[in-house]
Length: 265
Image (tube, rainbow, N blue to C red; front, side, top):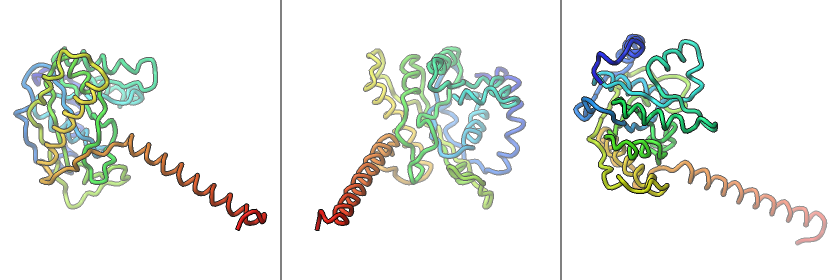
């Protein structure tokens, strides 16, 4: 998108946000040449800090192609913040409602208008103990396969050192470095013109997340785990552990009661 189409609200947000970002974070930005100069596209970005959307938006704003983020619908109703969200063209996500699919439709419309839609495929801050990308949700893959637009994998690291996940206070000193690396488009051609089954979307999502992880490996200079952290599997395993513990405690309690009543040894 040419800079002349960025619009008032995005420029106003940049005036407010860029100075503190420049003060708080040094920059190591690479791969800007992989951001398409024109036409609609998607970026798939890892998520490891509450402030990394600002650090990443700073990176992409400087390419001249501003991102449209998917954000919780409640933010769009909060006074000045809501006005800014609407004015900058962010896309509201209505969870657990009849409007839940509207974000998907809006993302497709934005891409088809020639804009960039930025996805955090993990859906939330990573819960991987070492900050690696988790398994992803299928929204980005669904939009990509529907529109056949380029998908640019983007990794970022550094904002999480300024404000770690779920931390309440930033770590200001020493000054941190925002490292952002945009890779070449993900090859999803083998998924085109096929029935968009859950299995197909899952496989395409895994390809996208693998590409994001490769970029983060390059930034960090180390290898990611062979299997990405899966929060759903972890929740299932946690329920199993809780169930086993509860059953064990009930069994122990039953034996203790039996002994007290002279029914056991």
